[in-house]
Length: 349
Image (cartoon, helix red, strand yellow):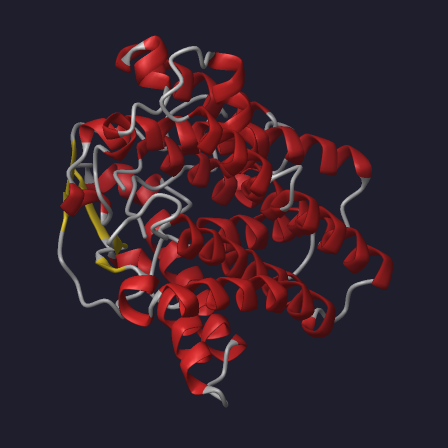
């Protein structure tokens, strides 16, 4: 969840969301069932006049979307026999988080003329896949993390065997859910989305990136090309799938799909560059997971290869590239994607 300065539909693509005098951010401990939009509290010192001129409130947008997404996710995994596997799935799926991927899917669908209802099953599926990746990533055989989103990781609560199975079940359910629950969309487009999502999570996507990431740990010869491959596949691929799938479901033509694919690739890589930065600049309490893990295992990151300041510049450049892809759209309709790109650059966990 986030709170950023509101976005003005009249602003050009490369400007900030709105002029700010100062931004103060603080992370507050909230109940685990509080929806994502309330998890990060940001206060912007803007004048009353500035606030009146803004046409898009990102706090409100993410709050509304988080409620819709959380309600849909709650229904997507009902409690049934054997209860323990559903408890494990729900524990991680409903543990909060920023819901960036489903929000991107809904926003891109609406941008091209589609509806929330058309995209929501795929939005839920993407969060299922993302949750699966987190459950498996936290396992002792992977990153061996004890906390995720400020709570004990799945395997710490349910055991390694159940955590593995919960991730497997979420992955399987994600594709079933897209196929079964998507309404009002041509079957060929639904099939296209299933292919898009499947590619993003397999050996050409998330899994491929994770493999290279594991093999690269402690290897001092890893350079920027390899690091970019890891980030583009491990993180950016699923974000790309979210944006592109939403566009497909909304009836986008190939030109729009290509443009939004470029947008999503830029924000996807920026997301991971910022993640690298936060690993060395944020605390465990701020992140909701163990800080300094990359440094501890001598993992190649953007700060370790090009330095902290250049890493920040790269994130800025990627976000600017992403916003450029939105220049031809109605600013009011593109406002959520502008703001989500800015959020990715400014996020604190």
